[in-house]
Length: 212
Image (cartoon, rainbow, N blue to C red):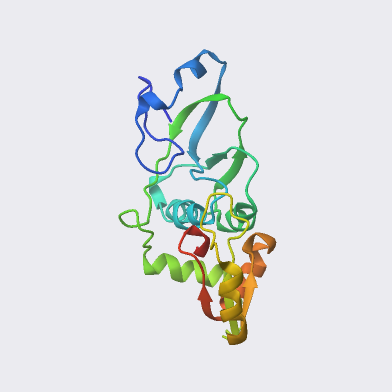
């Protein structure tokens, strides 16, 4: 997002990045389309469960509690496609008056008004307010008691960017007799993942965003 004098307001990158590394100036030669009214954006690394849960879904909660600070309908722009996690959560989290609006990848848009909402997470380590977490669980947790009868080992054997346990076969020879089941989360739908952890008594996994 650029200001009228073309300084960088925000990028879809999480964290600090130097403006000169964004390579946005060549894009300014392209045709610019106007978006009237109030616009905000879905900012995240789209394929990360962690960024979806910790950053972008709480932003929708903030929009829903903005009250009189927001005048009229809000257009929520995003670059398609939505990830499987976004497809499951985002439509169910949209506040009244907020509409999903896909934009053309690589295109430029001039916004009449841009609504910038702050992240709810604390200090970059993923802490979220209890009031938000309670609201989220009411919306998405299974409406049944937890069985707490599953022992889960989360395998990252198919991960492209590390987090793999090199001696996983040997580890499973120890965990298997204790009753642990090996699970590859990428093979499960989002509702199936929710059910899995809802009923888990113990989870063993490599540290990382996969635990989100």
